[in-house]
Length: 420
Image (cartoon, helix red, strand yellow):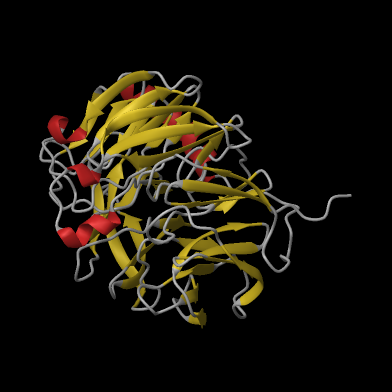
Protein backbone atom coordinates (compact mmCIF):
# COMPACT_ATOMS: atom_id res chain seq x y z
CA UNK A 1 0.00 0.00 0.00
CA UNK A 2 2.83 2.40 0.85
CA UNK A 3 4.48 1.83 -2.51
CA UNK A 4 1.29 2.55 -4.44
CA UNK A 5 0.58 5.78 -2.56
CA UNK A 6 4.20 6.77 -2.87
CA UNK A 7 4.34 6.17 -6.61
CA UNK A 8 1.17 8.22 -7.10
CA UNK A 9 2.78 11.16 -5.32
CA UNK A 10 5.93 10.58 -7.30
CA UNK A 11 4.22 10.62 -10.69
CA UNK A 12 2.48 13.89 -9.88
CA UNK A 13 5.53 15.57 -8.44
CA UNK A 14 8.02 14.46 -11.05
CA UNK A 15 5.74 16.16 -13.57
CA UNK A 16 5.84 19.33 -11.46
CA UNK A 17 9.60 19.14 -11.07
CA UNK A 18 10.47 18.27 -14.65
CA UNK A 19 7.73 19.73 -16.84
CA UNK A 20 9.07 22.57 -19.00
CA UNK A 21 5.76 24.43 -18.82
CA UNK A 22 5.17 24.20 -15.07
CA UNK A 23 5.46 27.50 -13.22
CA UNK A 24 5.89 27.84 -9.49
CA UNK A 25 7.76 29.87 -6.94
CA UNK A 26 11.52 29.39 -6.72
CA UNK A 27 11.02 26.75 -4.04
CA UNK A 28 14.51 25.31 -3.74
CA UNK A 29 18.05 25.40 -5.06
CA UNK A 30 17.92 25.96 -8.85
CA UNK A 31 14.16 26.34 -8.87
CA UNK A 32 11.08 24.09 -9.05
CA UNK A 33 12.50 21.85 -11.79
CA UNK A 34 16.06 22.00 -10.45
CA UNK A 35 17.27 23.02 -13.90
CA UNK A 36 18.18 26.64 -12.97
CA UNK A 37 15.99 27.99 -15.78
CA UNK A 38 13.72 30.83 -14.70
CA UNK A 39 10.24 31.17 -16.23
CA UNK A 40 10.44 34.99 -16.12
CA UNK A 41 9.81 36.90 -19.35
CA UNK A 42 9.72 40.55 -20.32
CA UNK A 43 13.18 41.16 -18.89
CA UNK A 44 15.68 43.77 -20.05
CA UNK A 45 17.77 42.60 -22.99
CA UNK A 46 20.64 44.91 -22.13
CA UNK A 47 21.93 46.92 -19.17
CA UNK A 48 23.16 50.49 -18.93
CA UNK A 49 26.60 51.28 -17.61
CA UNK A 50 26.55 50.54 -13.89
CA UNK A 51 23.99 47.77 -14.28
CA UNK A 52 20.26 47.55 -13.49
CA UNK A 53 18.65 49.51 -10.60
CA UNK A 54 19.38 48.20 -7.12
CA UNK A 55 16.06 47.84 -5.29
CA UNK A 56 17.34 46.97 -1.85
CA UNK A 57 20.11 45.37 0.18
CA UNK A 58 19.41 42.97 3.05
CA UNK A 59 22.11 42.70 5.72
CA UNK A 60 22.62 40.55 8.82
CA UNK A 61 21.86 37.28 7.06
CA UNK A 62 25.20 35.79 8.09
CA UNK A 63 28.26 34.86 6.06
CA UNK A 64 27.97 32.13 3.48
CA UNK A 65 27.28 30.87 -0.01
CA UNK A 66 23.65 29.74 0.28
CA UNK A 67 21.40 30.96 -2.51
CA UNK A 68 17.73 31.89 -2.02
CA UNK A 69 14.39 30.10 -2.14
CA UNK A 70 11.26 32.19 -2.79
CA UNK A 71 7.62 31.37 -2.01
CA UNK A 72 4.48 33.44 -1.40
CA UNK A 73 6.37 36.72 -1.25
CA UNK A 74 8.94 35.41 1.25
CA UNK A 75 12.65 34.97 0.59
CA UNK A 76 14.68 32.38 2.49
CA UNK A 77 18.43 31.91 2.85
CA UNK A 78 21.00 30.76 5.41
CA UNK A 79 24.22 32.14 6.87
CA UNK A 80 26.85 31.84 9.59
CA UNK A 81 26.76 34.20 12.59
CA UNK A 82 29.30 33.67 15.41
CA UNK A 83 30.08 30.16 14.15
CA UNK A 84 26.40 29.20 14.23
CA UNK A 85 24.13 28.51 11.26
CA UNK A 86 20.95 30.58 10.94
CA UNK A 87 18.02 30.44 8.53
CA UNK A 88 16.56 33.86 7.67
CA UNK A 89 13.22 34.82 6.14
CA UNK A 90 12.80 38.19 4.41
CA UNK A 91 9.75 39.91 2.97
CA UNK A 92 9.48 41.19 -0.60
CA UNK A 93 11.11 44.49 0.44
CA UNK A 94 14.11 42.75 2.01
CA UNK A 95 13.00 43.29 5.61
CA UNK A 96 13.74 40.48 8.05
CA UNK A 97 10.66 38.51 9.10
CA UNK A 98 12.45 35.99 11.30
CA UNK A 99 15.84 34.40 11.90
CA UNK A 100 16.30 31.00 13.56
CA UNK A 101 19.27 28.96 14.73
CA UNK A 102 20.03 25.69 12.94
CA UNK A 103 22.99 24.37 14.92
CA UNK A 104 26.71 24.88 14.71
CA UNK A 105 28.36 25.94 11.48
CA UNK A 106 31.13 24.08 9.71
CA UNK A 107 33.67 26.52 11.19
CA UNK A 108 32.74 25.42 14.72
CA UNK A 109 34.41 22.04 14.16
CA UNK A 110 38.13 21.37 13.93
CA UNK A 111 39.32 22.71 10.59
CA UNK A 112 42.72 23.01 8.96
CA UNK A 113 43.91 26.65 8.85
CA UNK A 114 43.91 26.65 5.05
CA UNK A 115 40.23 25.72 5.02
CA UNK A 116 38.90 28.40 7.40
CA UNK A 117 38.58 31.08 4.67
CA UNK A 118 35.92 28.86 3.06
CA UNK A 119 33.68 28.93 6.14
CA UNK A 120 30.02 29.84 5.79
CA UNK A 121 26.65 28.32 4.97
CA UNK A 122 26.30 26.10 1.91
CA UNK A 123 22.85 24.56 1.47
CA UNK A 124 19.86 26.59 0.26
CA UNK A 125 16.52 26.19 2.10
CA UNK A 126 13.72 24.21 0.45
CA UNK A 127 10.11 25.41 0.78
CA UNK A 128 7.14 23.04 0.68
CA UNK A 129 3.72 24.48 1.55
CA UNK A 130 3.83 25.95 5.06
CA UNK A 131 7.23 24.46 5.90
CA UNK A 132 10.81 25.40 5.02
CA UNK A 133 13.58 22.82 5.41
CA UNK A 134 17.29 23.41 5.79
CA UNK A 135 20.32 21.14 6.15
CA UNK A 136 23.23 22.74 8.03
CA UNK A 137 26.88 22.13 7.24
CA UNK A 138 27.18 19.77 10.23
CA UNK A 139 24.09 17.78 9.34
CA UNK A 140 21.28 19.33 11.38
CA UNK A 141 18.18 18.91 9.21
CA UNK A 142 15.36 21.14 10.46
CA UNK A 143 11.78 21.88 9.46
CA UNK A 144 10.60 25.45 10.25
CA UNK A 145 7.18 27.04 10.02
CA UNK A 146 7.25 29.33 6.98
CA UNK A 147 5.32 32.16 8.63
CA UNK A 148 6.86 32.20 12.12
CA UNK A 149 10.12 30.26 11.92
CA UNK A 150 8.98 27.99 14.73
CA UNK A 151 10.88 24.69 14.67
CA UNK A 152 8.65 21.70 13.89
CA UNK A 153 11.26 18.96 14.04
CA UNK A 154 14.95 18.40 13.57
CA UNK A 155 17.19 15.43 12.90
CA UNK A 156 20.96 15.00 13.27
CA UNK A 157 22.15 13.19 10.16
CA UNK A 158 25.55 12.40 11.67
CA UNK A 159 24.01 10.54 14.62
CA UNK A 160 21.02 9.01 12.85
CA UNK A 161 22.92 7.63 9.88
CA UNK A 162 26.36 7.11 11.50
CA UNK A 163 28.01 9.61 9.21
CA UNK A 164 31.19 11.68 9.33
CA UNK A 165 31.01 15.36 8.37
CA UNK A 166 32.02 15.86 4.72
CA UNK A 167 35.35 17.61 4.19
CA UNK A 168 33.68 21.00 3.65
CA UNK A 169 30.45 20.25 5.46
CA UNK A 170 27.10 19.31 3.94
CA UNK A 171 26.26 21.46 0.90
CA UNK A 172 23.05 19.72 -0.13
CA UNK A 173 19.68 21.39 -0.59
CA UNK A 174 17.13 18.69 0.23
CA UNK A 175 14.49 17.61 -2.27
CA UNK A 176 10.77 17.15 -1.53
CA UNK A 177 8.44 14.95 -3.60
CA UNK A 178 4.92 14.42 -2.32
CA UNK A 179 5.12 13.70 1.42
CA UNK A 180 8.73 12.51 1.31
CA UNK A 181 12.01 14.36 1.84
CA UNK A 182 15.12 12.96 0.16
CA UNK A 183 18.66 13.64 1.34
CA UNK A 184 22.17 12.19 1.23
CA UNK A 185 23.66 11.68 4.71
CA UNK A 186 26.53 9.59 3.28
CA UNK A 187 26.69 7.47 6.45
CA UNK A 188 27.18 3.79 7.25
CA UNK A 189 23.50 3.56 8.25
CA UNK A 190 22.34 5.38 5.12
CA UNK A 191 24.11 6.91 2.17
CA UNK A 192 20.85 8.13 0.64
CA UNK A 193 17.65 8.36 2.67
CA UNK A 194 13.94 9.06 2.33
CA UNK A 195 12.24 10.73 5.31
CA UNK A 196 8.66 11.55 6.18
CA UNK A 197 8.61 15.30 5.61
CA UNK A 198 6.12 15.86 8.46
CA UNK A 199 8.14 14.07 11.15
CA UNK A 200 11.64 13.29 9.92
CA UNK A 201 11.01 9.55 10.36
CA UNK A 202 13.10 7.34 8.07
CA UNK A 203 11.18 5.54 5.33
CA UNK A 204 14.17 3.93 3.67
CA UNK A 205 17.95 4.24 3.70
CA UNK A 206 20.48 2.83 1.25
CA UNK A 207 23.35 1.17 3.13
CA UNK A 208 25.11 -0.35 0.11
CA UNK A 209 26.96 2.76 -1.08
CA UNK A 210 30.01 3.76 0.98
CA UNK A 211 31.38 6.66 -1.12
CA UNK A 212 32.51 9.94 0.42
CA UNK A 213 29.80 12.58 0.07
CA UNK A 214 29.67 14.89 -2.92
CA UNK A 215 28.85 18.57 -2.58
CA UNK A 216 25.75 18.72 -4.77
CA UNK A 217 22.04 17.90 -4.50
CA UNK A 218 19.66 15.24 -5.82
CA UNK A 219 18.00 15.71 -9.20
CA UNK A 220 14.75 13.80 -9.83
CA UNK A 221 14.27 12.03 -13.16
CA UNK A 222 12.48 9.21 -14.93
CA UNK A 223 14.80 7.05 -16.98
CA UNK A 224 13.63 3.84 -18.62
CA UNK A 225 10.28 4.29 -16.95
CA UNK A 226 11.83 4.19 -13.47
CA UNK A 227 11.67 7.13 -11.06
CA UNK A 228 15.13 7.85 -9.73
CA UNK A 229 17.43 10.39 -8.13
CA UNK A 230 20.73 11.19 -9.77
CA UNK A 231 23.57 12.57 -7.70
CA UNK A 232 27.34 12.80 -7.70
CA UNK A 233 29.27 11.31 -4.82
CA UNK A 234 32.92 12.28 -4.45
CA UNK A 235 33.86 9.54 -6.92
CA UNK A 236 30.85 8.42 -8.97
CA UNK A 237 27.61 9.36 -10.69
CA UNK A 238 24.88 7.45 -8.83
CA UNK A 239 21.18 6.81 -9.37
CA UNK A 240 18.84 5.57 -6.62
CA UNK A 241 15.31 4.23 -7.03
CA UNK A 242 12.80 6.66 -5.57
CA UNK A 243 10.58 3.80 -4.40
CA UNK A 244 13.04 1.98 -2.13
CA UNK A 245 16.50 3.57 -2.46
CA UNK A 246 18.20 0.68 -4.22
CA UNK A 247 21.19 1.61 -6.37
CA UNK A 248 20.01 1.46 -9.98
CA UNK A 249 23.25 2.30 -11.72
CA UNK A 250 26.62 3.97 -11.20
CA UNK A 251 29.48 5.33 -13.26
CA UNK A 252 33.04 6.16 -12.05
CA UNK A 253 33.63 9.90 -12.28
CA UNK A 254 36.09 11.75 -10.08
CA UNK A 255 38.80 14.38 -10.09
CA UNK A 256 42.15 14.27 -8.29
CA UNK A 257 40.65 16.02 -5.26
CA UNK A 258 37.57 13.76 -5.06
CA UNK A 259 35.46 16.89 -4.90
CA UNK A 260 32.40 16.73 -7.15
CA UNK A 261 30.14 19.74 -6.60
CA UNK A 262 28.05 20.43 -9.72
CA UNK A 263 24.56 18.92 -9.90
CA UNK A 264 23.77 16.47 -12.69
CA UNK A 265 21.59 17.44 -15.66
CA UNK A 266 19.09 14.89 -17.00
CA UNK A 267 17.50 15.34 -20.42
CA UNK A 268 15.75 12.81 -22.68
CA UNK A 269 17.20 9.87 -20.76
CA UNK A 270 20.74 11.27 -20.93
CA UNK A 271 22.74 12.30 -17.86
CA UNK A 272 25.38 15.03 -17.93
CA UNK A 273 27.94 15.45 -15.16
CA UNK A 274 30.82 17.86 -14.65
CA UNK A 275 33.73 17.88 -12.22
CA UNK A 276 36.35 20.49 -11.34
CA UNK A 277 40.12 20.17 -10.91
CA UNK A 278 40.46 18.79 -14.43
CA UNK A 279 37.66 16.23 -14.14
CA UNK A 280 35.94 17.59 -17.23
CA UNK A 281 32.48 16.64 -18.49
CA UNK A 282 30.75 13.40 -19.39
CA UNK A 283 27.42 12.49 -21.03
CA UNK A 284 25.94 9.12 -20.08
CA UNK A 285 23.08 7.02 -21.45
CA UNK A 286 21.66 4.63 -18.81
CA UNK A 287 19.66 1.82 -20.43
CA UNK A 288 17.09 -0.33 -18.65
CA UNK A 289 17.43 -4.02 -19.46
CA UNK A 290 14.79 -6.75 -19.66
CA UNK A 291 15.63 -7.87 -16.10
CA UNK A 292 15.11 -4.26 -14.87
CA UNK A 293 18.82 -3.69 -14.29
CA UNK A 294 20.61 -0.78 -15.98
CA UNK A 295 23.73 -0.59 -18.06
CA UNK A 296 25.45 2.74 -18.68
CA UNK A 297 26.95 3.86 -21.99
CA UNK A 298 29.37 6.78 -22.20
CA UNK A 299 28.22 8.99 -25.08
CA UNK A 300 31.15 11.37 -24.87
CA UNK A 301 33.75 12.68 -22.44
CA UNK A 302 35.93 15.79 -22.55
CA UNK A 303 38.29 17.65 -20.25
CA UNK A 304 36.45 20.88 -21.13
CA UNK A 305 33.99 22.59 -18.77
CA UNK A 306 35.43 21.09 -15.60
CA UNK A 307 32.93 22.94 -13.43
CA UNK A 308 34.08 23.70 -9.90
CA UNK A 309 30.82 24.59 -8.12
CA UNK A 310 29.18 27.38 -10.13
CA UNK A 311 26.81 25.02 -11.95
CA UNK A 312 26.10 24.18 -15.59
CA UNK A 313 22.91 25.05 -17.50
CA UNK A 314 21.35 23.32 -20.51
CA UNK A 315 19.55 25.66 -22.93
CA UNK A 316 18.36 24.65 -26.41
CA UNK A 317 20.81 21.80 -26.79
CA UNK A 318 23.83 23.63 -25.43
CA UNK A 319 25.66 23.58 -22.10
CA UNK A 320 26.83 26.80 -20.46
CA UNK A 321 29.10 27.13 -17.45
CA UNK A 322 32.60 27.87 -16.26
CA UNK A 323 35.63 25.63 -16.00
CA UNK A 324 37.92 25.47 -13.01
CA UNK A 325 40.73 27.95 -12.33
CA UNK A 326 41.51 30.05 -15.42
CA UNK A 327 39.85 27.82 -18.02
CA UNK A 328 37.01 30.31 -18.57
CA UNK A 329 33.31 30.24 -19.48
CA UNK A 330 32.30 27.58 -22.00
CA UNK A 331 29.53 26.65 -24.37
CA UNK A 332 29.47 22.98 -25.38
CA UNK A 333 27.16 21.06 -27.68
CA UNK A 334 25.09 18.76 -25.47
CA UNK A 335 24.87 15.91 -27.97
CA UNK A 336 28.57 15.80 -28.92
CA UNK A 337 30.57 17.68 -26.27
CA UNK A 338 32.10 19.87 -28.97
CA UNK A 339 33.19 23.35 -27.88
CA UNK A 340 31.21 26.22 -29.37
CA UNK A 341 32.98 29.07 -27.60
CA UNK A 342 35.17 29.94 -24.63
CA UNK A 343 35.58 33.24 -22.77
CA UNK A 344 37.58 34.44 -19.78
CA UNK A 345 36.25 34.18 -16.24
CA UNK A 346 34.88 31.75 -13.68
CA UNK A 347 31.74 31.79 -11.58
CA UNK A 348 28.10 30.82 -11.07
CA UNK A 349 25.21 31.49 -13.43
CA UNK A 350 21.47 31.30 -14.00
CA UNK A 351 19.17 31.73 -17.02
CA UNK A 352 16.01 33.67 -17.89
CA UNK A 353 14.31 34.97 -21.03
CA UNK A 354 17.08 34.10 -23.49
CA UNK A 355 19.87 35.47 -21.31
CA UNK A 356 22.58 34.08 -19.04
CA UNK A 357 23.31 35.91 -15.79
CA UNK A 358 26.97 35.16 -15.13
CA UNK A 359 28.37 36.08 -11.72
CA UNK A 360 32.16 36.00 -11.86
CA UNK A 361 33.68 34.94 -8.53
CA UNK A 362 35.41 38.31 -8.10
CA UNK A 363 32.11 40.16 -8.39
CA UNK A 364 31.54 41.11 -12.04
CA UNK A 365 27.95 40.34 -13.08
CA UNK A 366 27.46 39.96 -16.85
CA UNK A 367 24.29 39.71 -18.91
CA UNK A 368 25.08 37.36 -21.81
CA UNK A 369 22.89 36.22 -24.69
CA UNK A 370 22.42 32.44 -24.58
CA UNK A 371 23.72 31.66 -28.05
CA UNK A 372 26.21 29.02 -29.21
CA UNK A 373 27.73 31.48 -31.68
CA UNK A 374 29.89 33.46 -29.25
CA UNK A 375 30.14 35.04 -25.80
CA UNK A 376 27.76 37.93 -26.49
CA UNK A 377 27.58 40.25 -23.48
CA UNK A 378 24.80 42.85 -23.26
CA UNK A 379 26.04 44.61 -20.15
CA UNK A 380 28.05 44.10 -16.98
CA UNK A 381 28.71 45.79 -13.67
CA UNK A 382 30.67 45.32 -10.47
CA UNK A 383 28.61 44.06 -7.54
CA UNK A 384 28.90 45.65 -4.09
CA UNK A 385 30.66 43.72 -1.36
CA UNK A 386 28.88 42.18 1.57
CA UNK A 387 31.88 40.93 3.53
CA UNK A 388 34.86 38.69 2.92
CA UNK A 389 35.44 35.94 0.40
CA UNK A 390 34.55 35.28 -3.23
CA UNK A 391 31.16 35.61 -4.94
CA UNK A 392 30.24 31.93 -4.96
CA UNK A 393 26.49 32.04 -4.21
CA UNK A 394 24.38 31.13 -7.24
CA UNK A 395 22.29 34.05 -8.58
CA UNK A 396 18.51 33.74 -8.93
CA UNK A 397 16.06 35.44 -11.32
CA UNK A 398 12.45 35.51 -10.15
CA UNK A 399 9.58 37.99 -10.35
CA UNK A 400 11.47 40.48 -12.51
CA UNK A 401 14.31 40.59 -10.03
CA UNK A 402 17.88 39.40 -9.91
CA UNK A 403 19.04 38.20 -6.49
CA UNK A 404 22.78 38.06 -5.82
CA UNK A 405 24.34 37.25 -2.49
CA UNK A 406 27.80 38.13 -1.20
CA UNK A 407 28.71 37.01 2.29
CA UNK A 408 26.39 38.79 4.77
CA UNK A 409 24.35 40.74 2.21
CA UNK A 410 21.69 39.94 -0.35
CA UNK A 411 21.18 42.38 -3.25
CA UNK A 412 17.92 42.62 -5.23
CA UNK A 413 17.99 44.28 -8.69
CA UNK A 414 15.13 45.31 -10.95
CA UNK A 415 15.80 43.61 -14.29
CA UNK A 416 12.42 44.13 -15.97
CA UNK A 417 12.32 45.50 -19.49
CA UNK A 418 10.86 48.88 -20.42
CA UNK A 419 7.37 49.23 -18.94
CA UNK A 420 4.49 50.49 -21.13
